[in-house]
Image (cartoon, rainbow, N blue to C red; front, side, top):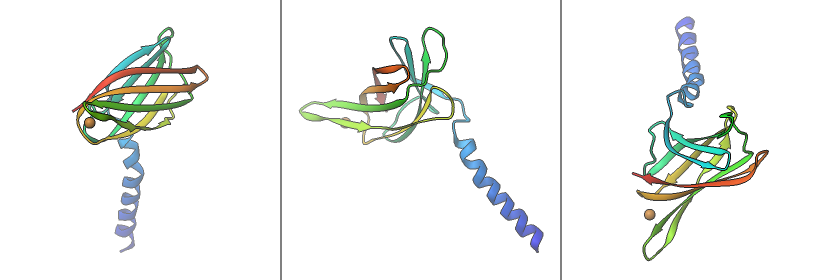
Length: 139
Ligand SMILES: [Cu+2]
């Protein structure tokens, strides 16, 4: 009786431990948008290569345009805005945190509807302060 139970518990424990690992961007990432600001190349990526209404997980990769090497950007934030005629812009901010991989940040953002967002990515760290702006279609 003990052995099957222990095997089941081990299996369950393994599944819990393996879950986050396999979910954490093991899949290929697709580029949503790339933007260069001075020497900094910002690449926004996700598993699907696009943003949709609702919750979205994404990756921001920072590399040097000159050296192609990852860049530590320090504190990174991402905010979005959608202009709507006759209304105040719809604003949504992302939570962004550094990944273990150098120059990589993991983010999450939620959109109430579809439409083109003006995206601002800002940073403040070893490479100085800066920002990149681009637009992304949420669909
Ligand atoms: Cu809107």
